[in-house]
Amino acid sequence: MSLITDQIIKQHSKVQEIATNKNNAQMVYVFSDLNVRDPFVSSSTAVMLYDTRTIVQGVWRMITTEEGEIPNFRQYGLNIKRFSQYPLNSQTVDGIYNYVKERVEVFETRAEIVKADVDVDFEQGVIYMTFFLRMKASGEVVKLPTWSVQVSTY
Image 1 (cartoon, rainbow, N blue to C red):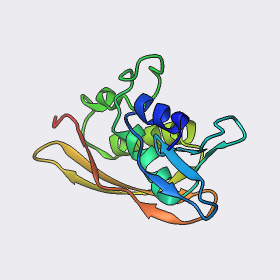
Image 2: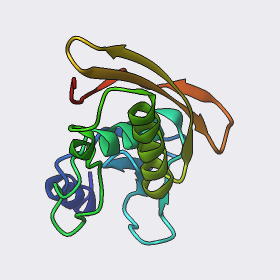
Image 3: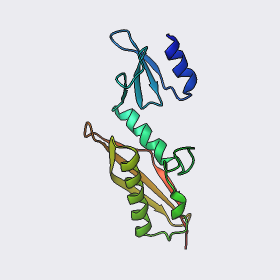
């Protein structure tokens, strides 16, 4: 491994994997969104990945990050707490769906939410949502893990 690859690995704690391509050049996946070819790291050798796994991970990371959690990028993530005092009804479900859909459109341009399956637990005041993503590059539709939102029971 070269010095540049070692530096990238030390700087980024979220390196997903190192793989060798057919030309025997090292491929370093940083934050699983960038494809960086070693040893020439520049704008021409670092490109966005468009594989389904990477896109799903990017969307899930955005959905599970609370807005304001990341320093210097405070607008990233969801402020789902704003729905905590809403009544448990179809308007709240529609509001959450539209909010998440809009945020995915802003922060993950490689995919779009096309549908959500919703299950409501009225006793606990929980809305369970399963989102379906369409990959813009391939048209493939992928189901995300079920995600829950606690709302008011009044």
